[in-house]
Image 1: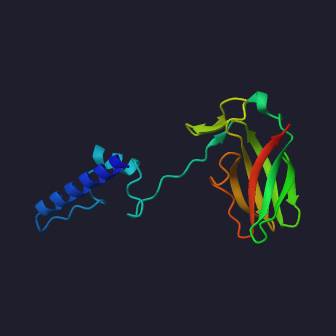
Image 2 (image 1 turned 180 degrees about the vertical axis):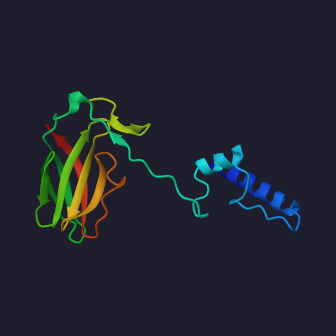
Image 3 (image 1 turned 45 degrees about the horizontal axis):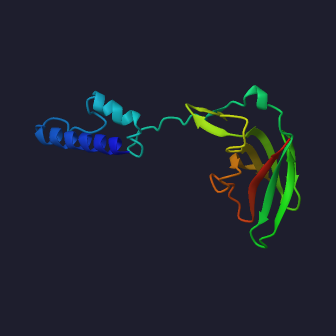
Amino acid sequence: MKNILKTTTLIASALLGFSACNKHDEKPLTLANAPKDATHQAAMGAGMGAGMGMAKPEKKESQVMVPGELKGKWKSIRIAVVDHGTKKETMVVVPAGADFQIPGTGLTIRAENMLPDFTMGGGVITSKSEKMENPAVQVRISEGGQERFRGWMFVKFPDTHAFDHPKYGLKLIEFIP
């Protein structure tokens, strides 16, 4: 972030300096007609230009890689369904790889990938080991046929990127072999 701020300041200073030196009959220097030097290109590559009429780079989705020895190891997950209004918590068992309608909620959940030791880096999401160090499950949650959530649920960090619903909360409790 500091490098982006320094680069932005450097570019702004350069633009002000160059535009102040322009003759009246020359076109003022702007980001649109600025020379494409290394500093400018670095700033654009670092995400500068968003909100300045320049296209944002596409966000690439990380690839999920479940190590072979972990595929099919767990048959289901246990989740807690919390009704925000009544504060009542109900446990349900969701089978792996199948749509499961959560009773009385209108929600359908599908547990897709289970990683006992979730880690991500270099565009890959995988498990560091077979130990339950950071258990996470990739889920899809729909309501009325519309997908409402696609992401990860964590045992140890239930509020990280949590499913946001006005009436219900879901928490991953455990994997079931």
